[in-house]
Image (cartoon, rainbow, N blue to C red; front, side, top):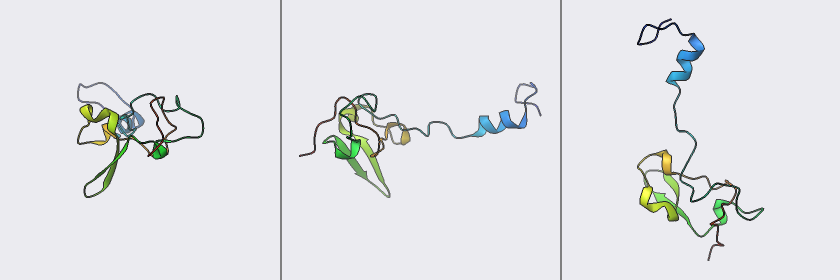
Length: 88
């Protein structure tokens, strides 16, 4: 099989090129796992639930860089980051 430029590629390489990119959320204010042990984004005061047709979880500290896609989402089950604060 050949790619767009005429180079030989395997079927596995072609599938890898077609796979969706950016599935991992990257909207955290700091690297997950750098906060208090046993805490998650779900227990942080900065979690924001953006309710649309579905609910998208965001970190309110990162509001300036929110996008309309999954690139600025977070996961509630992610370990807390160093900017974690207890929910009020």
